[in-house]
Structure formats: structure tokens, C-alpha cells
Length: 294
Length: 301
Image 1: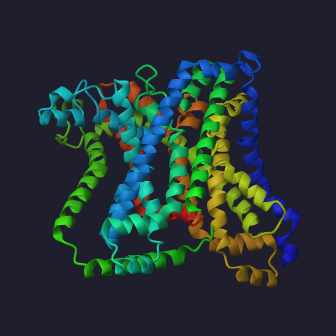
Image 2: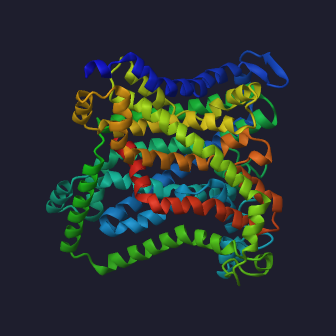
Image 3: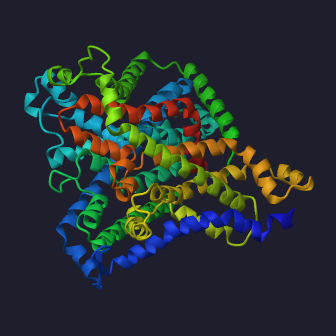
């Protein structure tokens, strides 16, 4: 038994293919990408060594700062929205709906599985102004709030909120289910004894349920922030980064730099900046999680 | 990462049942319940109405789009929109998605099952390091690998072929699959494996004939989760595929609306529905499995 489970050749046969495919397509290109950051050029025109010029340029590049600001703003708003609404929904599922929550959980989970571009087409139509009013402008018209009717996706400020709304709408069901799974794992006796001690309603949730839910809340936060810092599909499909550069996140900035402008070196530098940002934020949450638990 | 799914489910039902009893005991007053029900109703409208509207709109003629208000219903079922969407590209995009997603799924399952079996059931030095290396992959921004992969595929002539997507999808499907699958293998009973070994099975027979049937639930879960990821991929297929005849659904849709501009929403929404409803139906049939799968790894992990 032991001998068989330690059989080196069998281990290699089982793990080898996965390790090979994975290393060739994930870690190796990452290192390659880091190498690109000290070059400029592309596959067709050839490369030129530029030292740390790309990094120096990064800090003086206004479009990088704009993309960074957008990315961070978006990540904060959407993470709070997703996890916050998800939390409220999960509490609703467990403490209000009880066993009847199955159907509602399923329905609210719907948009999670839909293709982003399809959802974006829908949202474009909902926030449309010309040639016809979309749902939002029609409702405003109906409520005699014609002054508020505007081209929602045509202005950077409101487009930001449309993008956030769409992504929160899409993913709150996912976080609701994630947190729901954590909530139902809390032993019934703990809640019961807290009730016996006189805790109820919001106090029960604040002092008993939330502390017990902390580990999963942190996983959700890490998951959400890592996903939202890398937002790409939603923005590309809804606004294409416009008007102008106003809704361009780092991912799209990198994509345009690399593929539209053919600057592989600077594109890789932007990708590296994004990777560093994700890593930094994740570590930050981990650290605060540890000090919170301790 | 203790994987005790069945037990978890029993616990779920018990504690929820207990809570229900508690709720009935503490007679809540109607005044707080009604507003919450209204809120839930509102929530369902917000989640479901847009999807319903999308379906209805796919049957509208362009006249109905330009003259009717947003919430007007279509006057008849205009299948013409679907015919037009299907013949002007969607059939190709559909086929392309199927021809890239399913081979990738097969490879992901085969490779990740083998790897996680070895990582979890077999014993070898460095298994923890290997597992960690896979886990690190979950955090990497795809942008980090885009340019090198583009270069590799360009130089090997794989660019603008389905292979570029299949290889990339397979590699990026591994981290999450290995992570979730290791959890499922953890719960496989060791005595059954021992019994098989005593009966003279070799390690490959143990894997294929004993271990795999015992993680059937896990396999379905991972297949589904990965299916949704791959079917909805935009970045890779946008980067590696340039010819229209090889485009997958997401990129196809992106260009589809451009093809008609602001003018023809009917066929556009028919195309959107064609992209949306297969995934929705698949999800409806297997939703418990999806939800379990998504939560099992991350919560129990």
C-alpha cells in the first residue's frame, strides 16, 4: 500500500501533465513578461533595450494615474456593493426566508452565469437616451423628472456608476450564496443561547453572527477585490473605456497599449503594476484579518 | 480544507429548521415583515425584469423599437430576428465556442483530476509546494501572461487557431480545479482504496475505477464552474483570435451589435438571448450543484 502510494513514476504520470501545461502557460510567461518591462517594441518591429525607462515613464504618465484612480475607485465601490448587498441578502435568506429561500437564491444567482457582453447589451439599452429613451430615462420621464434625463453612458461620471451598477447587479447573488453557506454553518445552539440571553434582531447579528462570519467575509473581500481590480469585460462591452479615457481601467489601458499601440514593454509594465497592486491589496487584507482575529 | 459536503448539508437543514422553529416561537410582528417582503419583491423585479424584457425584446420589430415605449410588449412573435441573428454569424460563433470550450473542459478535467489525486491521495515530497504553486495561479492577473503568450502563439503559428484558446483555457482552468478537486479527494475513504489494493488493483486502476466514481459529484461541479468561466471568456478570445470565422460567442456578440449599430435592436437581442438562455437553462437544471461547488471549496477551504 505505502509503496504503491509513493511510486515516483506514478506520481510523475499523474502530476506531470498538469505541472507541465501550467508552468508553460502561467509562471513562465509571467517571468517573460517581467523581462519585457526593460524593453520597448513588439513582435513584428523588434525589441530595443531601454533599461528602467518604462518604470520611470509609468510614474509620469497621466493616463496611468487616471486608469489607476478609476480601477481603485471601481474596486472599492463594487467590492462594498457586492459583499455588502450579498451579506444583507444572505442574512435575509437565513433569518427571514428560512427554508423558502431556495427559489429566491436561484433567481438572484441568475445573472452570475450570464455572458458579460450579453448583460452589457442589456444595460446599454436600459440606460439609452437616443434614439429612444431606455428604461431609466423613460421612468424619469414618467415621474416628470425630465431635468434628470441624461446620456448615462456618454459622460464619464455617470458611466462610472452604470458600470458599477451592472457589476453589482451581476454578482451580488454569488456573494449572497457564498456568505449564506457560511451562515448556515453557524451552529444553531449558539444563536439559540444568545437569544436566551436576550440578544435579538440587529444586536444578535452585530455581536453574534457577524463575528462568527468574519473568516468568510474576509475570503469574500479578497475574492471580490481581486476580481474587481482586474475588471475588463464589463468596461469594454459597456463603454469601451470612454468617453475619452474616463472609464479606462488598468487592464484596458494595458490592452490598448500593448495591442493597439504595439508597445509590449510599456504594456508589460502596466500589467506588472496591476499585479503588484493586487498582491499589495491582498496582503493588506490578510494582515488586517490576522490582527482582527488575534 | 476538510471536505464534508454531505454532513454540511445535514447541518444546513437542521440549523435552518431550528431557526424556523425559533421564528415561529418569537411571534414577529407583521409591521416588520411586510416591508421586508416588499423589499424582496423589489429585489426579484430588479433581478428578473431585465432578463424578461430581453426575451420580449428579441421578438420586437424595429418599428416597435422606434415607436413603442421601453416597456411595451411585442405585438407578435417575430422569429425573423432569430433567423437573422443565427444566419448572420451567431451559428458560427456558437459552433466555435462549442469547439473550444468542450475540448478544454475535457483536458482540464483529465489533467486536474490526475494531479489532485496524486497531490491528495499519494505521498511524495514537495506535494505541498506543488499545490501552493497552483493556488498562486488564482491570483495572477491574466494581463501578465497575455503578451508572452501572444508572442509564443505568434511564433509557433498557433495564433488565430482554436488551439491557442484550448491550451490557454486548459492551463488557466487548472488552479481552481486542482484546488476544488483536492478537497473532494480528501473525503474519499482510505479504507476503500486499501481494499482495492489488497484485491490486487494497481495505482492506475485505483484512480480510474475506485477514486473517480467516488468524486463524481466533484467532477460535475468543476465541469460546470469551468464551463461558465470558459463560455464567458472575453479577454483571451479577443486577443488570440482575429478572424471572424473563428470568433467565440462573447467576442462575436461584441462585434454583433456594432454590425447593426443603433439601428437594429431586434436581431441584436435575439443574438443576446441565443447566448444567454443556454447557460441559463443549464444552470437551472444543475443549479444546486453549481452553488454547492462554488461554496464548497472556498468556504470549507
